[in-house]
Image (tube, rainbow over the protein chains, first blue to last red):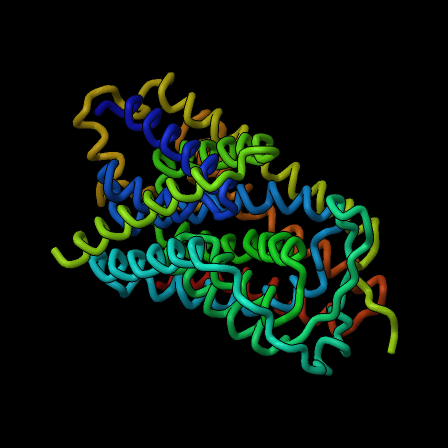
Length: 276
Length: 133
């Protein structure tokens, strides 16, 4: 493959990853890293570094829309991102000491978890408990739900648990070059009592800052290669935007099943790569 | 108990939304321009299949000093333009945090000034950490 061929292929694969990801509601990173490392011959660390940069672009682009629609709970996001950013620093720092094979194995586990979380039935929410911390910081929120046509108010519970899970999501983000929403959103929704739309918007809001912290570490370490990172960032963003426009009637079970199949195959190949 | 306060204010929301949108757009344009420059100008990416290995290989690292980036930008060096685009992208959420600090300070919300300042400190630490790690 010539440099031009590589650039076009990386751009195409990233477009597709962003498109599919936004259609099924996950970030592009979970597909970009396997695609770059398994199909395009990019070292896993450099694939992760290119992916984390693209995560900043997609999440900031989407966050701009959610914030202006007032769906994002910015106060909650700013509290929880303290933990995601600390986690991202931990993860990105650790990534320098984990050998490539280890990264393949950890990534394969996260892929498996993501595939499973997409197939499992919706979980049941845990009973609300008083949360003085959420009261004191005034984290409770409300937003206008367009599809319901009414204002939805909610109270936030278990802020401490949210901080702990956010830290873990941050570590995964920094270590693997993904957004980490797949870890945060279920807990925010089921345990913290936040409606799913506000969860997605708020998780997305935090991911930009989280990914920026990781990207800075990778950048200063010299892992972010301009040749790879540029087509990936542009591709994932354009793909995700197209996906968001198509979203109207396309959230069908077929796409979801196909996506889970892609995740499962990637997980298997990454396991094999890690055990080589 | 005071009523639930969702946001630091509509003006801040607008500002944050604009910063995010403008930062992403500017960086994407820069990244695209840098990639085109790398292909169109002199000692860019090359055109042989063997060149790819050099570009993505272990030696694919590049100097990350301000003088290299500024010098490269003046020469319209593709790689330096891409690096400027990457830095613009990384700076976008950082700027969002800085704007939030200012808005909480205006509202005299001490707890949130402290929280957002801590996030900003962590972000600045990340730059230092990468150099050390």
